[in-house]
Amino acid sequence: EDSLDYLEKYSGVRPSVTVSVPSEDIEGTYSLPSGEIVSANFSVSVLYNEALSVRRTIITLFALQLGMTLFVLLGLSVLRYDAGRLVLGPLRRMLKIVAFYAKNPLSPPPQRERIESSERSSFQKQNEAYLYDSDDETTDKQLGTFETEQLINAVTKITDLLRKCWGVAGAGIISSNLARQEGGLTAYFNPTVPGKAVYALFAFVVIDKFQSHLHALKGDIMILINDIAAVLHEEVYRWGYDDSGQCNKNLGSAFLMVYRIGAVCEVVEKREKAEAVIFSRKDTSKVRRRQSRRAGFQDLKRSSLGGSRRGSVQSDADRFSRSHVDNLDLSSLPGMRTFTDRALLGLLKTFASIHRDKTIKNWNDDFRLGAGVGAASINLNFGMDAGWAVEGAVGSSYKIDATYLSPHVNMASRMMSATKQYGVFFLLSQAVQRLLSENAQDKLRHIDTVTVKGSSVQQKIYTYDAKVRQDFFLYSRTETQADLDSERYSPAIWNVDQDLVAMRNHISSEFIDMFNRGRDEYLAGNWPAAIRLLKSADTIMFEREVDEGYSNESYSENLKSLTNLADYDEAEERLSMGDGPCQRLISYMEDMGGEAPDDWRGYRPLTSK
Image (tube, rainbow, N blue to C red; front, side, top):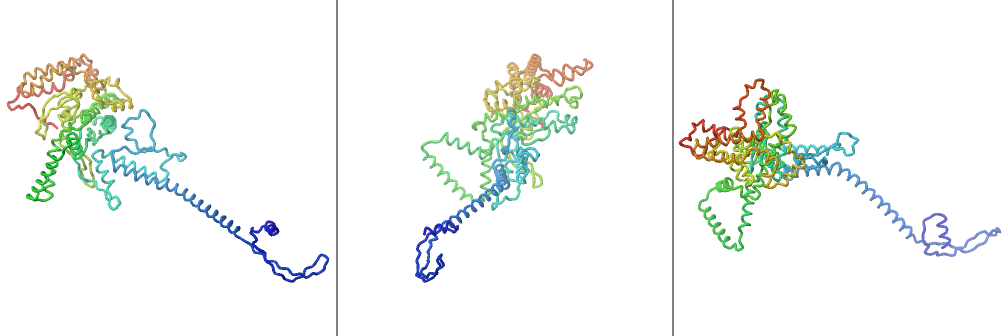
């Protein structure tokens, strides 16, 4: 056996184990070295065990097959990575974007890459979309190379465009259509979805002297509107409670700003839950018995009256409308005063920012607006109301507009228009005044009690006395500081904020006392005394403005251009520096003969829209 192992190694054959070597005697001959032939009996028979070689062969085949399998898996993983990176991943991101906007269409777009800047405002952060690198193909981070990335870019831009074009009122349209599914597939586009009743604050903002600006600037009026909108939208968004402030419509000369409180059904339900928690009792057996008796009575009533289901639904809707929509006291909602304060603050901050923004101030120096003498001044007028509205789409499949339909929207428009009649920049309805904090209410001035065109409801109207100042730039804040001011809001801001204090610096307690006395006499029908008191209040205002160094900017600039001092009209300058509400009330009473009519009831109609 040793010799056989040697032969195996020597010859290179596969190794084996010799099991036995049986032999049979066979007669044969062989030659000796001497040449002699010798006969002998011999035999050779060998039995080998090949188990070792077979085992090694199997192991070798297994290793080869395992290596092949790993190689195939590795190849598939590489292909899967490319498929996920180039196809599956982008498709998932597109589906997530659609689901993201279906859930909340007003959310800011998802971010891929942000601009690092400490001076970026909250409004800019909200409107940042996907940021792509340049078209240089050598850039490693370049996006848009693959078709799927281009689709993601397109989907993001389309959804962001929908969000900006339709705003708060169009959120339901976007959400319902993106989330609409039939059999797992997205259904056809249906823009005319049912409207939804909501509670909100409404503010109309109009550009003063827009028609003259339009004739002077022609095509460049769009640039002016967009510059004003940039300031307005940013301040409204910054100060709106929890991003509630949104622009619903850009009408060119005016803007409709909406501070959405919530759907009527949601607000009522949450309010009832809060009341249930506050007034809940441990022993509810009595309440349950009462509910049981009430339910039995309702069943008996329905069975006796009969009627269609539609009729019962309609009566429930009417009952809900009367008891909850019209009569719900919004001031009873938790956090409502902070919500309303921040809404008004956004408009007041817009007023200050318009008069210190460098871009807007450059328009004041525009030759076309100033008629060559630099007498132009870009101003805004503000009107606010609060209440319910129907939020939804108006139109057809050819063209739709997402809007709000409500008498409260019209009231906000009436307030905005009435600012010119009273010579003020801000007019707020009584509904808004009731929702403000005590500190904010202390800064408002009740200037008249009126009914507006199309309504018989008499209500008080208020103004926030704001005066244009040329030194608003002294109180400018960086975007980061302004965002911090908004986040740190407290009711004390009405007494300490530099902008708010500056724009009311011309108001004195003596003037407020005199005006209130004159207004009360006017409403009571004692017009001769009212005229006398209001004239005294107007004189106090004029003297205060002179002492503080105020002057009517446009008139003063025109005065500089006069070549003949005889053209100076002191009466006109006096009128421009007085108090607008005082002068308008005096003028109204004098036009009526100075005596209250016999049917005077303490209010007057505003016939102008």
